[in-house]
Length: 204
Image 1: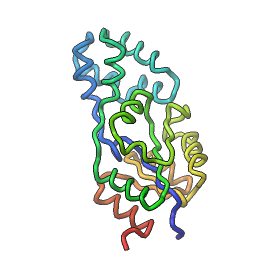
Image 2: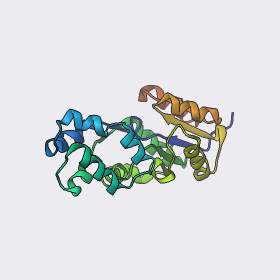
Image 3: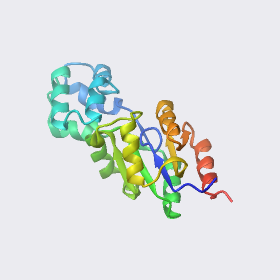
C-alpha cells in the first residue's frame, strides 16, 4: 500500500482531554441549579448538538442556557469558562508535531463549537500547527453525518486510503472507514502512535 498523504485528528479525547465539570463548577453557583445539573444540561445534550451543528449562534446558545438554568453571570465569564474544559494529551500532540516536522499534512476534524475553538486557540500553542481545520459548527454537519466527511476530503485534497483518520468514537471511525479512509479507533496513545508511525515508515 502506498504511503498516505495526510493525517486527520479528532480533537476531544485524542489531542485534548475534556470535562464539562470544569465549566459547571464555576457556572453552576451562578445559576438556579446545582453544578451537576448544570453539567447535565450542557454536556452532550440536544442543546449542545444544535450549537455544535451551527443551528444556533453563540448568543442564542448562551441565552437558552440562561433560560434553562437561571444563570445570571456575565456573558464574558460564560464565554471564557464554557470553553475552558480542556487539557493536553502530550503523547498525541508530540505525534502531530513529529508528522508536521516530516512535512506530512495534519488536519483537525471535530464536532465542536465557537467558544471551545476560541479558547483552544488562545490557550494551546500547538493548535496553530495544522494544515487545516474542519469544525462541525462551521460546516453545519456533525460526525458521523456524511457532509462533514466530504468537507474534510475537499480541504485535504485527498480521499480513501490517502487519509489516515484517528478518532475515539466508533461510529465516527466506521463512517470514515466506509469512505475508504485508514481509520484508527483511538483509546491509548501507546497503541495508536506505533500504528501511525508504521504507516508512514517513521518506525524504521
